[in-house]
Image (cartoon, rainbow, N blue to C red):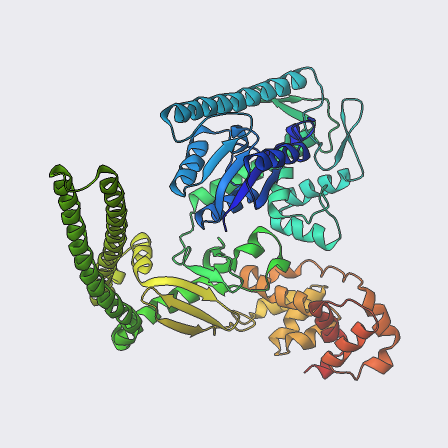
Amino acid sequence: MKKTAIYIRVSTEEQAKSGYSVEAQKRHLTDYCKRQGFALIDYFIDSGFSGAKLERPELQRLIKEIEEGYIENVVVWRMDRLSRKMRHLLYILELFEKNNVKFYSMTESFDTKTPVGKLLINMLGSIAEFERESIIQRINAVKETRKLKKKLPLGNPPIGYQAENDRFVQDENAPIVKRIFEMYIYGYKPKQIASELNKEGYRTKEGNLFTRASIWRIVKNPTYAGLVEIKGRLVDGNIDAIIDKETFYKAQEIIEQRRFEKRKNPQKHLLTGFIFCKCGSPMHSNANGNKRRYKCAARINYFADSCDSKGVKADFIEMEVSNLILNIIKSKKNELLEPFLNKYKALKQEQDNIEKEILTLKKKEKELEQKLNKYFEAFEDGEIDKNILKNRIEALRKQKEQVNKKILDLTLKTNQFESFEEEKEKINTLLEQFEVLWEVSDLTDRKKILSVLVEKIVVFDEYVDVQFTTGYRQRITIEEPKKDYFSRNLEDWEIEVLKNTPTKKAKALLMLNEGKKISEVAYELQVDFSKVQWLVKAFNRTGIRTCFEEFKPNMKIEFEDYVLENIDKLKHMTFDDLMKHLQEQGYRVASNKLKNFWYRHFVSKKK
């Protein structure tokens, strides 16, 4: 059974006004619906949302239920509750009309079905949009005036500040802001800064985790240097500076430099738009030259805990997908096309049935037209009463409308079949010429070729699922090539230099050059396994100059003291047993930290 929807919207500013609050609107609109005799009332309430956008949770739910045929009436306090933008309002009202939904505004009387009503709607909608633009202009003017008078900006102070005597003064979070700028200037990227702060237990002013976006907002905000923007210029404001101006402008230079580098060296990624992570997020390729990887967007945009996917090497997966398509075309073309052709056959059969049904309906339409003509002739000859004629003609016309609607729906289905036939022809042509086209195409054209053949590529931990537009699917096992520890052997002069370099890094390289494993080196030197791994990568990239500085000291981890105190009891345990034992003792142990500790102290017991 269809229901009546009461839609309520209040912006943050309007919530403060009595008589226009959620509860007030709800009470008055419910009474109005009862007076109108509407039953089965459902409430759709968007609290604190602007009327300038359609992306409101409850409005979207209302639109969905209207399209599904559950709503008969929509009631609002005033028309601008639906939208303050004219084009959005017209879109919503057209949606109502299309789905036979009646619209009621409690404080405005008009019939949306009449020309006068439609004119009134246009006028009221234009007024609402004008009112919104006027409010924005007034707010902007107030902001500028407050800045010129050295008064506080409107709104809540950002993290690091609190409002006091019409001035922004530093609070207990100011050191966090200072540290963010220092890390950014030192070379950390926003995602790395967010990850570091989150690990240390810091949170945003709202109590949320830091994200890449929240760090960006901080490093671009001139408020932290005591500056405000007036007519496009930055001037001193009534604000305590957390950082000096030199630090702020240095951060802006780095931002611009990174933007310029991206524009100068745009990265081209073949599978962007096609490749998705196992968690459902799209995957993006980072811009690290020869070390490109497709990584989960959730990990890139937020933090590592969003998804545990490690991604996949871009060059590897792009080459594998290209080779897969080529091999399938050469040896499995029939298998590739089989699901598509089966669907084509089913659609062809459906098309034949539809065409037969359309012929039958057109025949019925002609019969109804003939019956109508006979009734008109009988009325002209005086053989039938006017009232009987009216009833019979109305019934026949309704039947004819139903037949016409069905013919139209079936005709649309036949159009779908025609577009499917065009797709079939396009795929066949592309498969016949794929090898030649792929060789001569640039990246843009290759992406167009993929759009015809590939529906989706999903990356899992151990394999990649390639889904074709034909319905065929094929897996690629992820077996990325692994490099040796060193890209080259140490030369004699390098060995002499390292022997005279008093650092653990130098000792580590010499031990690795003698054939020792990374785990053995970490154990003997009592450093993290991961640090030795990074040392090898640094040596492959920059040579022995990476050894002229010492390993940074290990940070103390809570469980380490416990293990060292009970070392005689625990040193014979396997890694898994030790992990389980520590968890039983109440320690929250990250597996990578325990592994590093394991390599340093129990390398001989490593599984």
